[in-house]
Length: 111
Length: 119
Figure 1 (cartoon, chains in turn purple, cyan):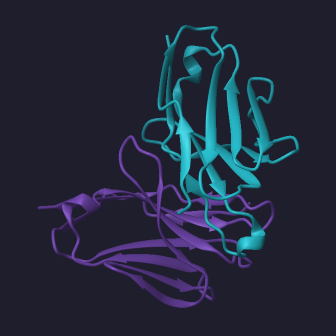
Figure 2 (cartoon, helix red, strand yellow):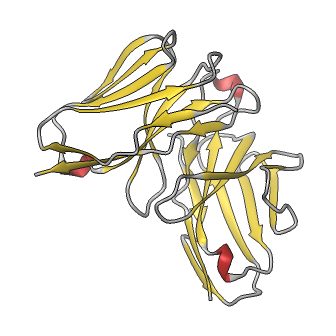
Figure 3 (cartoon, one colour):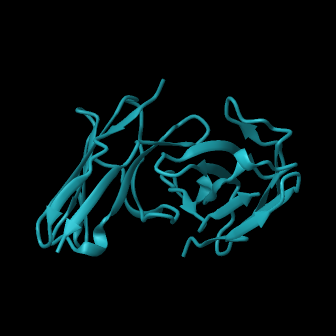
């Protein structure tokens, strides 16, 4: 069974710090990786996509992918209280196009 | 771009009522849409995959006669919860994915969700 694992947290960081969120996946053939942010009571919002090994930066967000280690991470620089949310790692299931989600990491940024 | 609209945002109704939820992709064609359910403090649970012009594929344990899915066009999928009961109360979320001919690595874009409360 294909799995995506995340630490459930909560991860607490002070405002201005770097938040580091990690994710591992079991299917070595996976090609597409996504990070979604979900505020309490809201639906998930796509914040980063990554497909190639290495780093991808978008503003304060950096996604990192290491296919050999089957590891994806998300770094949030200069964390703000508004970043407090649950972050979902998702991996594309190549059969049928479903997304396999991790259980999510709850991030709390303290002012 | 990639906006998905979901309506209604909230439904409160009596037990035994059937409820229809609409999911529309506003600025792209979605050959595939997905329906999820989420209970408080829990992960997203995929209910079914909806393909335009064909029958939906339901995940194990999801009653297809209870949760009717129709994907009649490239921009609209509907979920009907038939004869809803209090245990069906949940947060229902749809997502849509642009077609593969627009790129291999297509993410799912989510609607705002429908909070369903059955009294």
